Length: 187
Image 1 (tube, one colour):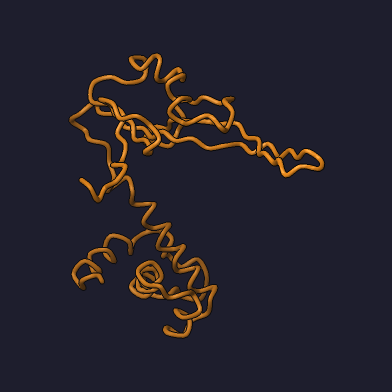
Image 2: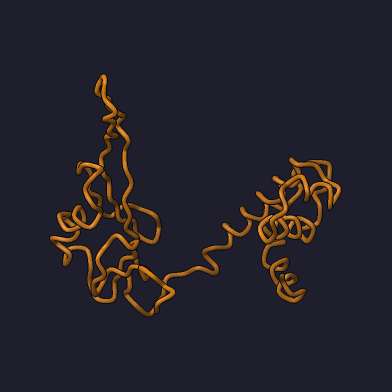
């Protein structure tokens, strides 16, 4: 639940966004109503049709209002999500994914194997790749691929000062690589 004061503040922040400016002859619904629909969809287990019947609007309108509010929030991100100005700290994220190449079967056998190529990448806070490694077989553990990457072997080229990298639990923790607890209930 959101308190009325926070709701009104969020309306004030979003209401002047161009997405809520009327582009045709028919006026848009108030920002408050569009925000209510957005928050109901995100904050409840209601499906779109339940929201439609509750508020007396059609499915397309629910989707339109959700898109309006999401776009307005994204347009405000630079005002509220900023890199620290007093530090030279730099954050990036690391993860891997697989390019599935297909499958191979051997006739008259239950043998079945999937083929994939591992790709690991590091993106900066803007989502731009600063390093990647591709070509290891999909069966190789992420930590082994990482240990053989240019990023790991030449860390000083990429990491300086208070820089850090976020990775998933497959990667080894280090002075600059932060991973989640493997079992958070024990910490």
